[in-house]
Length: 148
Image (cartoon, rainbow, N blue to C red):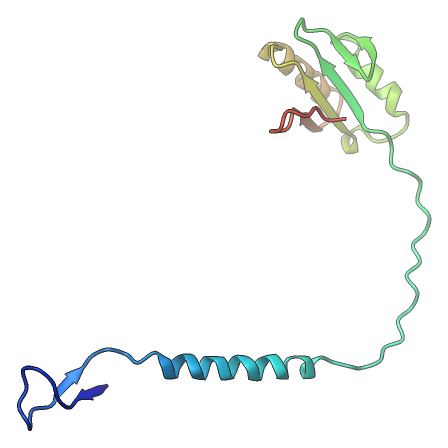
């Protein structure tokens, strides 16, 4: 706390308190500490030499091509570009993925914005009935570009 020695409203021997904080010394101390930490930080890095083994990953086969189902506004279905229907959807997908586990396959669904909710839910139900539980929905991004 600082003291005010002279000024208006006080007599010669009247001392008033000044309740304002002097920030200048605080800023000076902070700048000195900042410089100390900037100089000391690079010295604190560990310079222990370690002989690491080479990072050799086994060659993996390329990931399977993702499966796209398209639902058009009239309710017609396509797997990639080949047409299918709701009854044959499960069999066509199983034939397409071969021996891979359907519970671990991700199916991408893209639907026209005028697609009826019932048509979409019919496809979702058929996928779940055939063991395809990982489903991703594809839409247009905010800038209007269609996904490739």
